[in-house]
Image 1 (cartoon, helix red, strand yellow):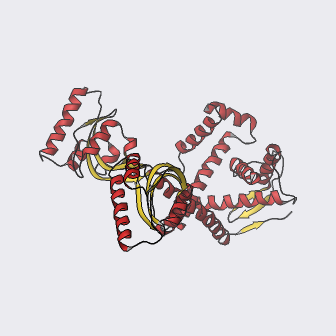
Image 2 (tube, rainbow, N blue to C red):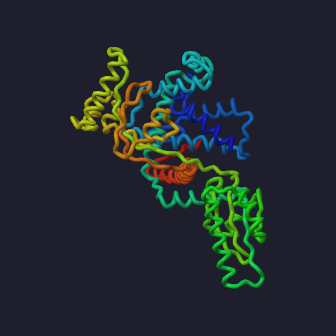
Image 3 (tube, one colour):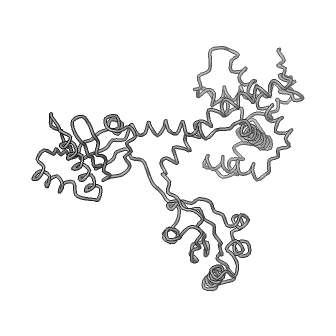
Length: 427
């Protein structure tokens, strides 16, 4: 695996614009449609592999490495030709951003990184920039083509999601208190009815918040045949297997039952949960009208302006949508009626959380102060989501996406090859 990663990095960093040494006759090695690959293109990468890859384990076959380099160069050339056909262009800013990012990762300034390339690499700085441009073109056309080819049905995501969730549930362990109402060896219908009624009364008491310990002490006096057990651990899937497959446990002090078994009724109270990764969050779907801080107006004037807008909306002088369009300083959201989409309460400061929790759907908040300025918010919808399950669903989608991308990339490359003229010139 290390070998393939290293080969890929060498080709990305050296391909497309490599010149042969002065005085040497550079021969054509591969023809790809109307483009050519020279021996120097291949030799340069081979040189880099030999120079930098001392610890890289290569396959035993003598020509294997060279064949893989040629194959990768052909594929890169085909993709680049496709990018040029689509008139994909890369800006100087995009190239400079890549340079800045590489320099940052190397703990260097841009000038230091530039000098390193000029002094140490077998490539001019201009050609290095050209390689980055080609790499970005290749990435853009690849993303575009794969996006066209890949479709992931919601049904498939849900299938993988359920498998992940079920696996997680098997790890969940529950600490329980339980009450057991045993049957006699010979039980009558009246006895069964009384036991059932008692079990339901106990369940209601516990479910209303009655103390388990208090109930336990009282029952020892009045119902000596009841059995109690505290603080024992059991896996959730074991509990489901023995009592109910659809049993769901999601919080402490949750009361479960009564469960009828051959030997009696069982009532459980959840005392603790291990591997309970559920995390319930409130999300708000909101629009806002933002009046930003200004160097012209002071804080009091901005506040007064915002409250004037708020009062005009409340008094129906104009609508919230009109206020957003005419007065909002948030250019991005004002073009879409102030729409900010779904925002979770943990990403908001306390003032916003308090105000939004009190709002009803389609209600408008009083102006709220932030570092940016003053906001008037309209709450469109409110929902509770489980952050853990939300994350797992995204992971399910990513899992399917990566598998499909691998397959579709292979199919796409094969299509490019089949529709192209490729000739490798043997020596």
